[in-house]
Length: 181
Image 1 (cartoon, one colour):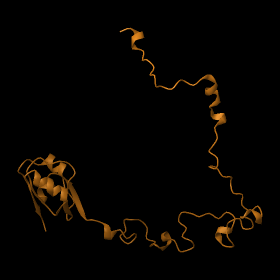
Image 2 (image 1 turned 135 degrees about the horizontal axis):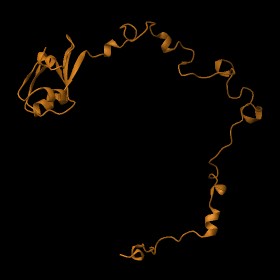
Image 3 (image 1 turned 90 degrees about the vertical axis):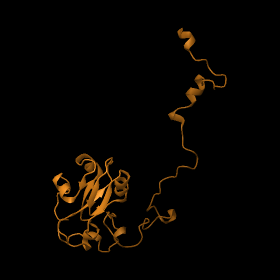
Image 4 (image 1 turned 60 degrees about the vertical axis):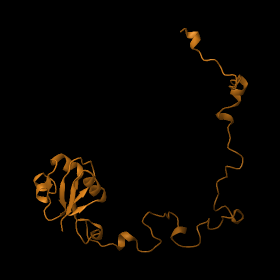
């Protein structure tokens, strides 16, 4: 195919290219915002007639009327702020320092992908077997099976808890879930 044959033909409906005078008329030097879209800056403290004279919109007395007054992130309007109302014990490692305990879960997770890698089909997965395989190594803390990963083997899994998705996937693979009390 020759280069001349490859050139696209201009469409009959396409708008004509702008002429030299039209291209010169449009530019950054003659663009302006729409009328009424920009308002002048409010000049405060410039006399009573301006509407924001005398106190310049700061009100009468108080902290906000003083020069240099800023609203900081922790400021609660003069009320004793939350960071001063909390206990003064340092560090989250102390149980009394911050009230995290009611929300903490005391379980150790085991994912389905770990069971898939470490156990053969038809295996009995107990807490001792998990510990021997390098999973659930923290003694005295319950084990919960979570659904991260896929399971293609039928396993009998003994654990203290199962997530809903993990239970469904174990059952779908032909295995069983046994809850330990």
